[in-house]
Every structure is written in structure tokens, then in C-alpha cells.
Amino acid sequence: MSDIFIFFKMGGYALYVWLSFGFAILIMIFLLVKSIKDNKYSSRLYEELKLEIEKYKDTNAK
Image 1 (cartoon, rainbow, N blue to C red):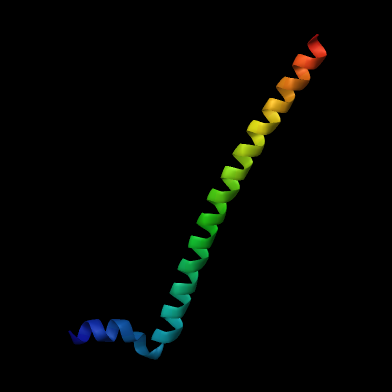
Image 2 (image 1 turned 60 degrees about the horizontal axis):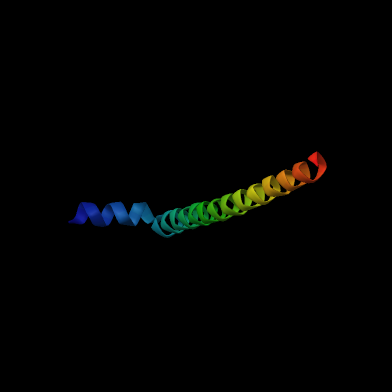
């Protein structure tokens, strides 16, 4: 049991280590969520632009 306590204490640097670890995890979660949202937005924009191009082609073909 004391080995686990020593591990989590990290030689007196536990606060710095665990806060840094938590901050890094939060940043990665934020980047994951932002990437997913940006991907959805880009996909939607791409589909809208494809429709606009098709409308333009149909209009000019006649």
C-alpha cells in the first residue's frame, strides 16, 4: 500500500505532475471536440458547395 502512496506522491512533485497531466488531458479533449465540430462544418459546407456547382452547371447547360 505504501508503494502506491509513494507513486502518487511523486517525490513531492505530485501537485505539479497531476495538474500538468490533467491540463494535457483537458486540452486533448478540447481538440478532439473541436476537430469533430470542424469536420461536421466542413462536410456540410462541401455538400452545399457541390449543390451550388450542380445548379450552376444545370443553369449554364441550357
